[in-house]
Length: 533
Image (cartoon, rainbow, N blue to C red):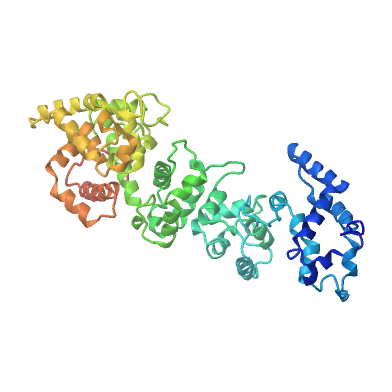
């Protein structure tokens, strides 16, 4: 076989049945041997080896392109002299086999090509700095309602006319109306136009936010990433001026102010878990304040909204403080606080409270507790099952601040309880027995280390009893005797918290005493006190 005339044969001829390489293995061997002997082949193989050693990306297509030219000029001429008729002319795309071989022959492909050159994928935007844009239908619906409400007020709405927009368009509690109005009316013109509202609510990305984020952005001051107590004051002022359940307070501005303060203190006690005095958006979303605001906007009886806004709960807190504040300077000291709950607390726990370990006092007078400080205390004392209360009392008992309550620390507080039981001829319970009882109730994770963590207390439903055993004698005795009245009360209202049940009982007691004082039939307190209402 003469291999010198190999350059004049089309490679397509190799696919003919009569010239099948598979049926003539000698032809394949000769062709392969000749291909290896070509100078271009040697250069290509050497180049590929060098590229592999140097970790350089291999360019197969370029080398093979040069090789195809050499191979096309190296096919033997004897194939043309065979008796096989020539192939009919056809387009390059007419034969699938020809198309596959011409466009992507196997020997031209690199196995790593798909990894080196991944196909670009379009990832949809998933982060929006100001929240996702509103859906087209939602935006159109909002604009339609805005056009309808502003149609009769071409010049804009005044504050007393804006409440409908707040309620129907923004779906916000109506007592946020004045705050929202001032947020839009930055120039204090007294009027909010349609364009100004659309710019703030629709173009300002407020429409697509969740309710908590909307309220948060409306209340917070420009540049602040948190809510302060003062930010809630305009909301409470609007609530006092508009809610039918608080109408009877409109002639007593002093008690309106006290009510607003108490609501704010309760909000920060439960919502501001970090204790910084600044509520973040995360804290607002985790709490139940937004739901309570919606409820109070729909409920005419303010006392049915037991979370934060109940007037009866405010009345209990205020009157309890009034009873202890003998000189009515709106400050109480240690001696005053020791009278709380008919002298229920021990000296040692009161000392810890006034050392400001559980919470820094807001009072500017040393050794005195303000009304705000008392509000935090009474909420913690009367509902020891809540997490803010557990954190409050845990700090008091943890004398060395190491994050655990040890038997020695528990014994330090229980010693006074034991002495008080002996003074009232109550059969004392030894500390060793009490310690076993506490560990059985809490079941701490580190039982072998004889210590209790805050996590252990939060995981137990009996944690409140631990603190009562250590420093509240009256509640300790009630726990030991298993007061059937309290047990029945808990079963009748399982959804109520300890604070809810306490406030309910106390309001009944205080209102009855108030009636007796009004009728002049009895003296309620040890010394005559002016009624706060």
